Length: 442
Image (cartoon, rainbow, N blue to C red; front, side, top):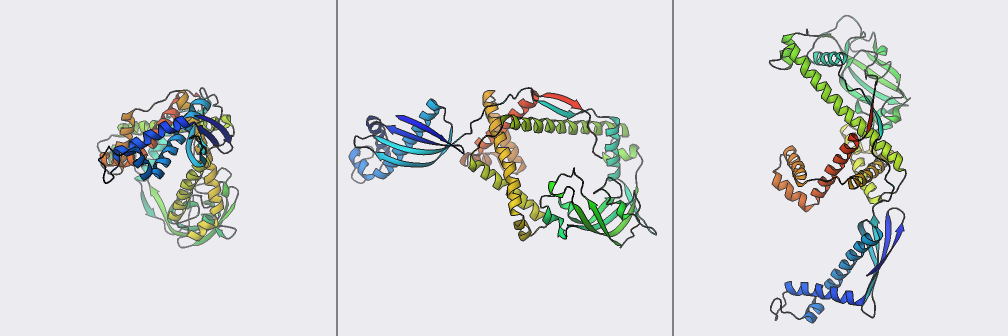
């Protein structure tokens, strides 16, 4: 067999192959023999059917099987000789059996992207100092203390800073509901009912609580604030938001004392000293998880930047985009947006999802290539362990889930996910990490 490869844009390639007559005859004989071993034709004993009878009876199927075998062989030939890494065959055309018995065809393939792997060891990242300070501990304990607080109604005066106001509110921008202007923004920025608002400068939006000072129970107020530039949703940054706020109640907070009785309420049998140590350990674990996320995000961002722009298979980006769009639509539906409201923002939802999908697919290829370079492997027991965890989460027998995954190629996906996670762990281990002070979130 001879084969030539023409690489095309968008991770595609044309594979033109020619199979000499003697190879066609040899392969055809093997296909016919396989059919003869299983065929059941009246008047003939199984396994004793003449080849000519098989050829005539199953000609179309034999021709199809033969062509499939040659396509697979041509793809392997191109991989071994040209380094072509095909993900799939999208079209086979120009099939022609020549007069001398040979066969040639053209196959259109989807290929893995080609790019130069950037330096991936020693990537410089900056992360917060993970040390748990007494300030961190006291702040966490205050949070626990507030969860066990009692509240009393405030009567005879309006709202003051430090109170808890129970409010209903609805926001709009230029007369349009916040949820319509920014469908991906958190639902709590759009509207809420029965929301307990701690009256403080750093609560909700800047200036929101100050505008409610003096408001009494049952009063309705119009509050206008400007969304800060560091708000996560870009569509809201710098926007003037008008809120209609109704004060449903005012509460004062009564905090319990930090003593052993309080500790025992939080965790049975704990003293205050023991509770402090437990909380410190939890903070340390949370800060370590946050640290790992910081390292991971920075490493991947820098890898993508260093690799530069390269094409990835369109169908993979399309599938990932659709998955992300489905998630956004589902989240917005849960927030109460109507189908018409979601459709109104369809283009921007698809655009945002597409950009995220593009980066996700690219990063997966980068990580896969690093895994290959470092020979990062996944053991069978790791895959089976992951299956057992999924089964436990879904309350499904592990053996039943395993059979389902074997049928729909699910084990290969799990293998790939584990390999990616092990590669990320490898990159974190080899990153050059600098700890820097980061202002604490209020």
